[in-house]
Length: 144
Ligand SMILES: [Zn+2]
Image (tube, rainbow, N blue to C red; front, top):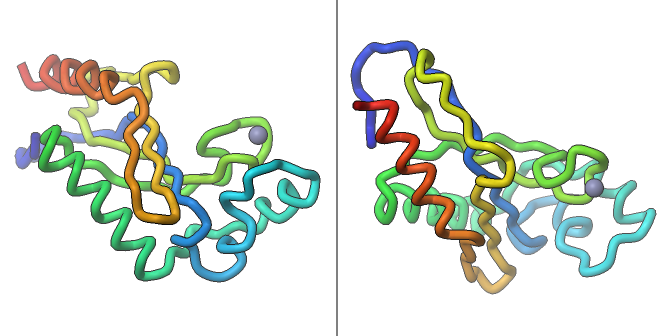
């Protein structure tokens, strides 16, 4: 659903992308994806950066491709330490956005957002895939 007109656009959040530790460069590689949370993990995760290694970048591109090819949604990613949890940095990740006309007043409520997980072995899991259908429905409302 590419929009090529000059209308003013704004971006809305449709979900979150969480990559496991193997996809990150530097410190993040040691602190993301630990199975159990501890105080130390929380402390470490405050220092996590969005810097991915080439493998991680490839996987993020693959996720972008899935949204484009399977759902016709052009997504953008934006790093957030609080992607999956507003209270603490236990779930850092990339917020997933799409662009919609600024005047559409469209929002995707938190409970309707789509979460995507990429395991160390490269397996991509879209949780609650049915929620994408409601995102696409909303998109259609924008372009009526
Ligand atoms: Zn938390």
